[in-house]
Image (cartoon, rainbow, N blue to C red):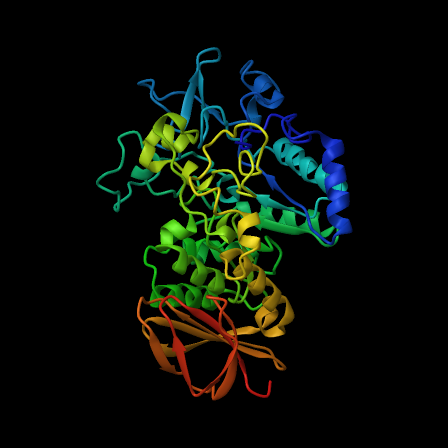
Length: 473
């Protein structure tokens, strides 16, 4: 899966070699495209030479590069922490008679970031890729890299779901002593200093948790991550205008003045956007929201085609979460191959991919949708183009309006440019009076079939979003 790294400074032969990566970076830069790579700082593979040395002896110099502890007197693990993939976060090593920590699979032992040698080695990894011209990093689970120095038990989770699988030990506790330790921010500042030394680079962090903890990763002086990933809209349990606005307003209120927001609606850990929000009409509305809010949008591959959850037979499951916690928990449904055309394996590969293709791959692919002027792919293209043409949509402020319970309406504004965005989250047609709008023109609809003037009132079809340019602006 790419998250059990055995060599941070090389490329798996399945994907090529360093020369090919260098060619990719050069070609991308010639087209003004930035290249960002995943950086996995929390854990390595158990096949990494560091861990092979670490587990070889209690006295090996790299023993303290990982987190080893004696068993409790009864032989049980050192504390109550659970693996995210089920079972305890500790595995006993018979050869050396101690447990090692792994918050994910037992094949993914956690590094000991409290060891200065580990920090130096992992910073050297960043330098290696920065010297090759990489433009930034998506830093995996950065909130986990530092653990409580005493490795204390986590407190019980008072909101533990009643249907929690027996082996979901992590879900039984609150992540107090293995997440967001205060000292992690000093490391984030060092990350930032290193990247800033290479000029125009970006640090993106995978994080979750309450807003007050999340926002700290920007740094008190804008000296940590450029973009701590914001998953709040993606994780929102309710799909309606009030919930979306409340989430956006809370984020805007929490951000310091220097911080730039960002939004994510899909990734490899959640079910597909179109399946999560209710279908294709809702997926189109979500696209308009994502690409018109203030901040950097992150698109997950396939969402621009409206891909829905793939059908993964139990025997085809690859995801450790699905294998260990039950087929209904598999994330493979959102990881099916990209659908490029009708040929072979949807143009993704000349050989059979490791997950089944979606059943609609012959009709829902890039080639087919490129020829359909009203497709969701062309909606994404129009939204991206519109965003780039408008200062208001690119960098303008966000100002929400109180219009109707089922409608999320907001201005995006600079001193010289204004756009109104109106999103109907209901399955009913709405006729609205928008305060302060007056006359204007609908320049883009999520249906891709409106370019028309409006005067005073605004009509929105079910699950329709529009962008409006006010008159004389």
